[in-house]
View 1 (spheres, rainbow, N blue to C red):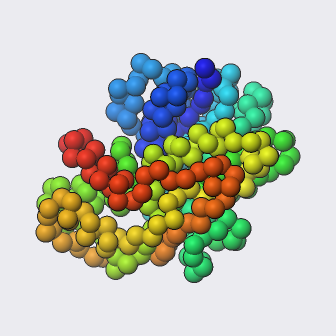
View 2 (view 1 turned 120 degrees about the vertical axis):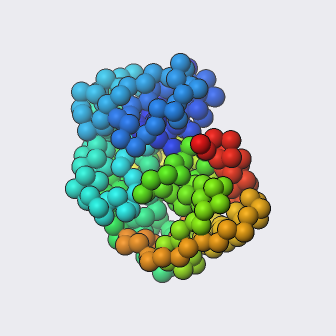
Length: 314
């Protein structure tokens, strides 16, 4: 039985990952400062994990959390493109300085493997599709720039200190425990929440922007595969994690209206700065290096997410 640290473990992806690892009968340490994570995300597993409340930028806190761990799943970050445009310095501080702190703590503690939550936003608005990891990094928001900078540090630590680092470039992740509320809510939970309340969902732009939506179960599996991949595949270079399936926001709305049996129509408004128009992943590198294959496709994941929101939205 090994011990694993999940930074940002009270967040959407982190809390799902904590459950995934517990099901493997391993010990889980969650480090979160609850800036965006939620205590209720850990409620029914609280007695089965070690919860540390603290900031990833605080070296002493991370040192304490990381001691004796087999690997680190570094999910902790300040997410959201719009939030980063509102407060770029804060996004940089949390995401980049927090990541360096985690890497330094891992290096000092002799924890060789760090699996990092990177982002497909690093590709920017490049017209080539699908997105392949050797394409140039062209971020168009401070959030994307911060995530790209963290990838660079993952590679640097792998090369300079022979650490085993993996950067998983998540495409649009969705599923249970994703926050549907607030100014920075992700699109699927925001749509579902509005439709369940019979309120018009808000679409930024014409709704024809497309995404490679990936259910969080696939992301948890990818993290676990990365933690157990051969060392030679852990060089910090980015690996796309998605389903290789393109869906527009309008298609999502149509599907949700069918599943929820509602005729509520969306309200369309201006495009948000920093939003990417199209995003589709080539996942051949994930297959090759990690043995990754998405087990939940978009349609299955959407039905699973709706069931969770119906049962859990207040």
